[in-house]
Image (cartoon, rainbow, N blue to C red):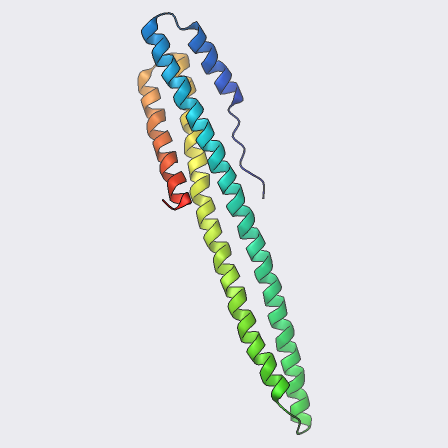
Amino acid sequence: MDEIEVPTEHLHEAIHEQVHHASNGKEQKWSMLVAISTALMAVLAAISSLFAGHNSNEAVINQIKASDEWAFYQAKGIKAEIKAIKIGNASTDTTEYNRYKKEQATIKLAAEALQAASKEHLEIEKKFAKAVTFFQIAIAISAISILTKRKFLWVTSLFLGALGLLFLLQGIGI
């Protein structure tokens, strides 16, 4: 699967331009805080995106491996049934039939474990994807706050960034 992209370059340019044009010291300091917090959120969004892509890929890989195991499981079942037919037609040894059935049970456990791992990676990926979403929204609101010079929007972006950080930490397992 593709990585989640975080297109924030144009927002950074607009923010840095506003910081550069800020007139007084207090406004310039606030603009600098907005720029720094936005840059940090962009870094966290990129990290979250990387983790989301990794977990998504791992989920797909595990599901493919599980499918391979299920195909192997079916092949063993077919071999066992062929042996059962031979056993029914003649009094032959049931050792191979029993071996195929035991192997089938082991293969089933491996396939189910891979499916569970795939599901777990998808659950983790969802947390990272939520983190990316909150960071992207926070970055956009932060850019709007500096363009409109509305501090409450910046506070809102910090709150949304904190939610993004929460999902990032949940995804990492902290």
